[in-house]
Length: 236
Figure 1 (spheres, rainbow, N blue to C red):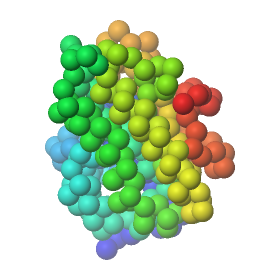
Figure 2: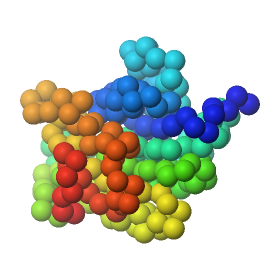
Figure 3: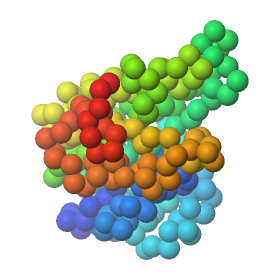
């Protein structure tokens, strides 16, 4: 086992192979982190890593909708690293094209909740022993303004509800992990030019990633259970 020295900061970014997740990986690498780029397949992870051109980024297979995949990812990660400083729960789906709250079926609701909400809970639970070994670990959940009470939209039902629930998860995890010194926060990246956001979105992936990187590195470690956009606290 070739463990990294304890002084090295390490981050795991789920859904790190594209969009906001990829930009988060770029920003953390630039700041000197060892970054584990997690994707649903090893091919996707390796293809993204080729673009980053760094020897401090490592591929990991992690499907947040699959508990077995989550557990295997922890075992794989633990072969090389003994602690985790930052977990960024970025992976998510937007399955609401062409439907609304009046037409959505149970299966679609369950799919969004399983990935966007339950996946965050299970991933955080699985990596918790590694997070507890860090000096002051941080968990960052990539949420959305559509998950705020004032932002709910009838035209994005499963996405809105799953992100609303994710914000609730953030509050509960922050309370549960306060005694362990682990900060847990949600952030809204804004409307970003990604596969999910579309080409007409106002923000670049780098702009969308900025607050997550700030929360990982520079935000006061006493901040926990909060919701941020553009490095400012916003209302749930």
